[in-house]
Image (tube, rainbow, N blue to C red; front, side, top):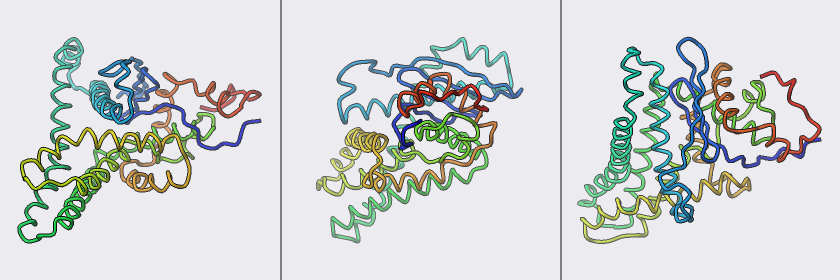
Amino acid sequence: MAKKRQTQYSGIGGQAVLEGVMMKNKSKYAVAVRKPDGDIDVQVEEYKGICGEKTFAKLPLIRGVFAFIDSLILGMRVTMHSASFYEEDEQEMTKKASESKSDDIMMGITVVFAVVLAVALFMLLPFWLSNLLGKYIRNASLIAILEGFFRIVIFVGYIVAISLMKDIRRLYMYHGAEHKCINCIERGRPLTIKNVMRSSRQHKRCGTSFLLFVVLVSVIVFFFIRVDNMALKLVLRVLLVPVIAGISYEIIRLAGRSDNMVVRMISAPGMWMQRLTTKEPDEEMVKVAISSVEAVFDWREYLVETFGYENETFEDENL
């Protein structure tokens, strides 16, 4: 008989891509994509991160910075891979595949641009708006609160705006399929279409929750760290981004490994935001997500070791 099925950390994570799902387990990741002809293509690769297995990259707070950078790099890589199936010109697609060095350079530039844009939008723009009001409001604490308010509003507004785009809806459905697969496994259920479909589409370790934590932590940090010099204020908002990301990573890491009341309360805002960034998938999307999971993770062995399925068999499960 299986053990009581409380949520147990599995170590796998992923993201949605164009018509597919990427799942990562340790240094191994798989991208499953539903091709235009209806078949599911699964590619398995290895990504050890920009720092590999170096010890300093695993230290608390510091590891969050590198984890964030790695997620951007890997995310861009798998997104480009999934998009390649929908290129109109097959010869051009082959040419792109052969130019891996150029792709790496372009990917690096894109990642840097994405980080700069995010810092400008979510860190500097709220500072600029609150600074405008500083001409009329002399209370430093109130200005700090207003900056935090602008930061939260801009972030939530951005999420709401892109969630309304029709082209994003299918991506969010695959995002839901990704979460449902992980929740299914971590709740101790065999990875079948039926079990996945009835699992939750919200997960505490989601990137949406991480970004929300970044915003909320930045509000607290900038409220207590104050300087009078305007240029120094601006510099601090840029320099403290890695620190804020590191703190946010530790919070979401704790949330993914605990299920007590305090953790649930802390995770609640991020779970709420995921109602916008995930949608209910159909069964065909779930099949793609399951293919991605099974390429890098032995869920049967996990259920045996974690939930006590010693006498259970999975051969008759209808996938």
